Image (tube, rainbow, N blue to C red; front, side):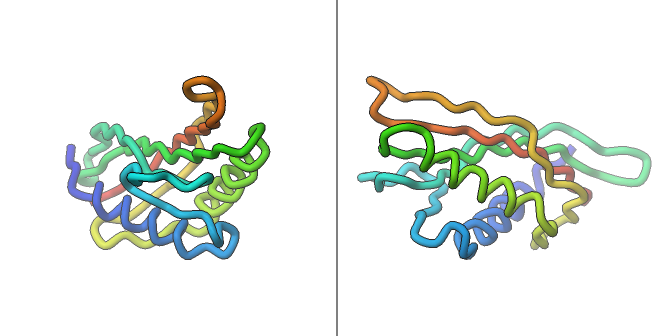
Length: 131
C-alpha cells in the first residue's frame, strides 16, 4: 500500500474545482476558513486502502468533498453538489504522482448542522490510483 499519491490527488481535485466555470464565485478550501462564506466547498477527509496487485502498487482513495451553505433549504447546496459530481465524472484529472485509473461517485449525505441554519452535503468519491 502507498499513500504516495494522496497530495497529488488533492491538488488535482482542488485545481479542477477551483477553476471550473460551473463553480464561479464558490470558494474551494482544503481547511475550514476562519469566517466561512455563505456557500463554499471543503475538500475534506480521505480514507485510503491498499489496492496493490501483481502489476504493481496501488491505492483506493475515498475522498469526501463537502458543500456547506447557510442559505434556506438545500437547493443552493444541491446545485453546487451536482456541479461537483459532473466535474469529477468527466475526463480524469492528471496527477503529479501516480496515474488516476478511475474516479467515481460513491455516495452523498445531506443534513442540517447545529440548529438547522446551515446545510451540509458530503459527497464521497472513490479514486483508484496506480503508482
